Structure formats: structure tokens, C-alpha cells
Image (tube, rainbow, N blue to C red; front, side, top):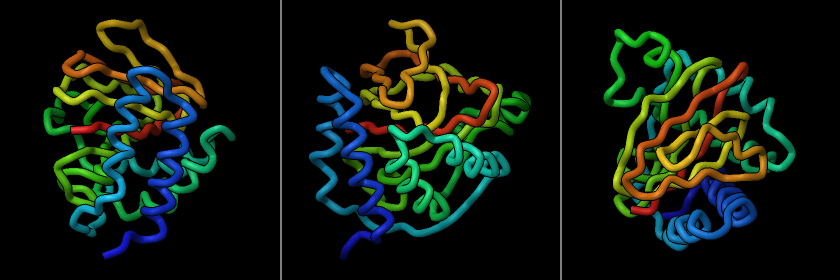
Length: 190
């Protein structure tokens, strides 16, 4: 099996953006993800969209030049993704329920189903705060649009169009959009 040209281009752009954006512990986590990209998981095609996904086109039009190659590569791939709400989301929390979606690109249930890493995306409508959460794997985020991240070891921060955010294993963390739509990619070595 071979990967689609869109997937190959996305993974190449991810590798380049991770290596140019991260240093120290974030780069070490990114390299653990990158080292596993030569292996191809089981292809699981399928498309599913939520209404919040209507913000993706607007978000992609706002990608800064530093992230343009990654934004283009993601844009070519995103129409193939299965977008879902966070499993713990509740309809009673209307802004969060209606204002966010996640898609797994590589990982459990993703376009390539595999158990050694997660690569995915989050989209949020303007003015949405993602719930505090934690998980065992460390995580590196690359922003495609402005947004802010928080974890229990740092205040809210926007890494800018050339930076990255790193969450150590098990740390409580969250993110939020501002006046515009939020679009970010996440990379977790398992």
C-alpha cells in the first residue's frame, strides 16, 4: 500500500513545521512522532462533518506565511476526515458542544488506523474555550490560526505562527479561540 499524495504532502509539511518550530522537549516529542511516519497504518476512509466545520475554510484563509505549506497540505486532506465532538462534551454546554470538533488523521479511528501515535486537528468557532483535560501521552500543538493554550505550568499563551505548544504527559491543559476561528494540529507519540 502507498499513501495518497495528499497524506504524503501533509506528513512532509508536518515534519518540516515541527522541526522548524520546536526545540527541547517539544522537539524530542515531535521526533518520536516523525520517526514513526514511515510505517503506514490501515487505511480507514470515511467522511463526517459537524456544523462547526464550516469555519475551516475561513480559518485556512487566515493561515500566516510561516504555516502556509502546512495549511495548504491540511486543506487538501481535511475533506476526507471524520470530525467528532469530544467524547465528554455535553449538549447542555451549548457553546462548547456546537463550537468544536476534532478529527484523527493518524491514530485510533483515523484515516490511518494505528496505535503508536495520534495526529489530528481541532477546529473551534470564535469565542470558544476547550474544556480542561489531560492524558498520559505528551503532546505538541502547531497552530494554523491564532489561539491560546493553557496548562497547569503556564499562563494562557499564543505561540504565534511559527511556534509550538508542548504539554508534558498527564498535565491539565486547555485552549481557546479569540475573535476568529481556531484551527490547530496535534501530535502525540504513544
